[in-house]
Image 1 (cartoon, rainbow, N blue to C red):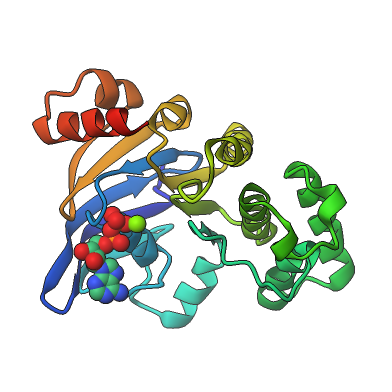
Image 2: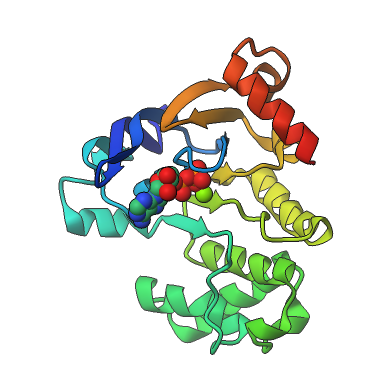
Length: 246
Ligand SMILES: Nc1ncnc2c1ncn2[C@@H]1O[C@H](COP(=O)(O)OP(=O)(O)O)[C@@H](O)[C@H]1O
Ligand SMILES: [Mg+2]
């Protein structure tokens, strides 16, 4: 099977700071990949490079076997298929919930308004927020905001969604609502890359866990291999500290 996304020796620096030091990773259709690692290890930068929010300095990022560096226009088209969910929701405060969900697809995918509304309503049902259709983000809880952000990503009909710590600004109870939606998406077979510290939750969903340390993939394997059988000292230390904090 051809990978959906393939990274080959991806390097990225900010001035003299080397953040990604040769990351190679294949993501196959239908896979759920969890990315873990200490703060500052390059997880967000990696996600942002995949989605084209940051440029890379060397290496390659291929989507469906096509290098995104070869044609800017092609890259833009391909990237419409990559959804993104951030830690801080990034909703538009002057749009209603429904508008937040459907405006991007109306603009980027040329979907007509009636069709977009239909998509929006079914997504509101999926995220269990039908009653908030005309509410503004300021009246929503953090968990509800993040569910809207997920629906907005889904409205674009993406092939994959990249999540950057989707629950880390939420209280445990609200985080649960969001994790529940992510679980449903995994059951639907959606490809996802999820940066998270919710290790117990993600180990039930992820096909693979990738541990990033100082800009390199330090360890990679099934949840079982990563959580129970690792002999990697740095990973063990990371997991122990995570355990103490949760
Ligand atoms: N836009 C930026 N400009 C300069 N340095 C940055 C920028 N974004 C991230 N960094 C630095 O890159 C390193 C990795 O950051 P990041 O990818 O956000 O790590 P993580 O998500 O794993 O916490 C950190 O040292 C951070 O300070
Ligand atoms: Mg980060």
